[in-house]
Image (cartoon, rainbow, N blue to C red):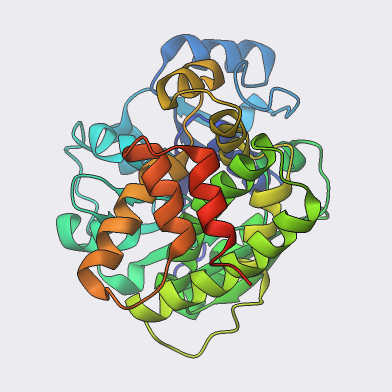
Length: 333
């Protein structure tokens, strides 16, 4: 790999903002795509994103900001995508610059609804990016704690270890530690699935279940995650590593978790629509629950995923949350 590769970040939400902050610790220049010109003008004037983790301050001289995705893609060798999976294709629809020669890392935790694929597979199938040029960034890491510079850990996964190390080096700092993995498919599915389990944790809290039950729920969730990922892509992996179990725990328990918050509101009796409107943020687990349920139905009907099935039934089939969780408690151990 050449030495001075240019980095670009696609997405102006909380995670995109956090990634730019991490990169700014090591890079003199970062290209950053934000679709709203008024937000760009605000950042240029005030040095922070007004809508997401506004406590993160930037030296604007380091930022090449643009509302043109083509300009940012053209200026970058390594791209990090950090937009909700449900909006990915809408953003890429405006793209006229080819992606196939770029190195692309996904920080997106979900399935692309148009194809039903995780982001890495989608980029390979639709945009012809070779798998060795595709990587994944996963937690356990909340954007809010990055802004506060609290010690956090990231997993950088890519089949090409050199590229994973290069990206990891640029994200490392006194408050960020990175780990390299070759399990690109497993870590990406884990990042998607943990949002579903966080919704389940939130639902249980909203329904009045205590910490004792939620610990059992999380224990069963990691085992269910392993069954799911092994069914999709079987390889030697330790499901108890931070990229799997650690990311699940922080998303299931943290006050910063929007998926847990969404589930908590559903448990308290909110409709899906009203919960989404009140949050004013995307809960990726909502879309992931549908995709995961459909995928497992196609792949292996014998594989047991009672937690995913319960969340899917409540969110998409209007099943009663209280009764569904009562039945779920009998399936857990």
